[in-house]
Image 1 (cartoon, helix red, strand yellow):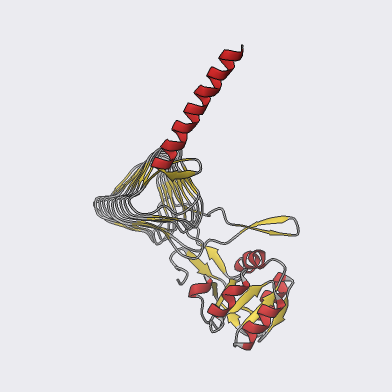
Image 2 (image 1 turned 120 degrees about the vertical axis):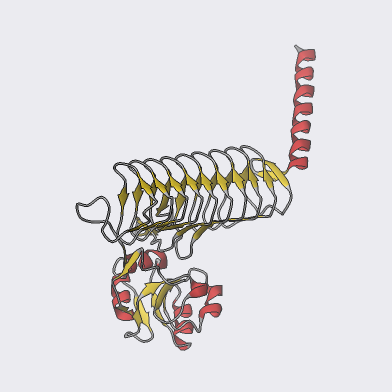
Length: 342
């Protein structure tokens, strides 16, 4: 996915030699090859920079014609022989973070005006006192922007959508007839980290938040923008107060999350999934269509479509109830044995 220039400014290019210098690494291949932006390995092509941490993935990207950050010199040689440029560095993820600072910069709303002259605001939209609307933002017909809300550069708010007081919306495309409550935060950087020589760096996030039509977000919901791809909530999703959805998550149509839900990065949630309160989902998992997750459960593996899971770690609810009943019986037996010997 190409970087959306409504939200990001492209600063490059950088050459492969430049990237090797920034990474403190060794270049294998053509040093003059230029990079303009970063990408996920599966979608990278000419002019892109990305990292590989799994040597087995090298075969799938050998023809990408990009600049690739790797830690294994043998993998670098293979990639270079296929026409790429590779930079060998001890921490490819950290090297990507350093290079991205010179390639991509998020757009900002600068100056003294609360409402940018470059914003497109429909005449029927209603703006409450103190709201801030950045350059290039678009506010649709009959939309309502609450007091103190911040609409960042390039953000689109669809027709008849309500943004609550003090909400902050950045790097986002919001559909029609959505209801986003007070204090919601959309589009901040996700929790992607890289370690190098004892230093911790935040990985770049150059994706977006996409909300389809008729979505409701409760107070203080937080949704992180994608790292390379988008975080995407599909039509009719309902998210209760104080929930968090991490970067690159996709939530299917008409799924429902009760309060305090926590969804880790790159999770795929199907259509019509129901979350009880305080459900947590580990990263890179899939939750199938119409699945039901009981309150307080911790999802540590994929959940098949249509199943109900409970517990921590979560499991099919029949297994959970069977184990709970066994523990109760054994506890009662132990209590009786103690009473007989006392």
